Image (cartoon, rainbow, N blue to C red; front, side):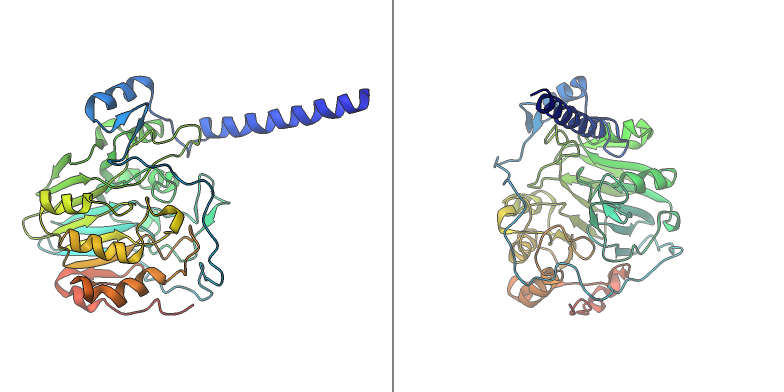
Length: 365
């Protein structure tokens, strides 16, 4: 009897230590970041109607599904061949009149407008994870290492998930960054990482920031947030529209399809280039990620001239065929009146020659 009691005590002790370790990891490991404190959360409630019950909400609330996703037998989520990537050791300056776009894989993009370098959701690590050795492993090369990035005038973060907010990358490039635009609540993580408060600009939907002749607007998206599993939706999420007198770019952020795309057009006008969440979808996740035909509907809603599908090509976070997003979108684009641009990862797209970047380079297993 004493032996069984001793065994039970040992098992309970190990279990307590295990869960205590997990708890301490999510509270104290640097890459997780600190959640907003009570004072900050109280100010959020005063700033936006979308923060209540101690969390942020979508326009239409929904319950996130439990579990991952249904099986997709035979789908090749990770390519068996090496994905072609254009590598950069240094990056050229742009003419102030030019617009250039460089998709870095997944949702990471480097945009040049008005002579400014604008970096979106830079995930430059091998894993989309709070640690550097386990998690969803990148299957394509990073076209630019942090040290090879140019000076960044504005860095945009869409939400706090690990495949969009890379602690390691932020810490390596912070000295190069002049301004961070982040959804309300994400500033708490940045402050806990020692980033200067003066550089951080937390925004809510439709709030604007103007810099060197470029107007940035944070736009709604239908998604969720969470780095610490003990707190959900403690920071906001969204996309970004930015424009000067000549060009407009719209990055959707992670989002399910909804009427907010029509609202983007109604408030901000037609879009020249749309960078759309187009991968890592699944039937169970229909509220938080668009499927290919929904991406085309969204491009139609915002009256986009050119559509560049992003959120694919680097991490297998769902189980669809790795190249299904561009394949389906490109094959059906003419029905929606949009021109689909499919640059290679790391390829610098010059807007004045944007129609030259339509190769189906991804057409292999």
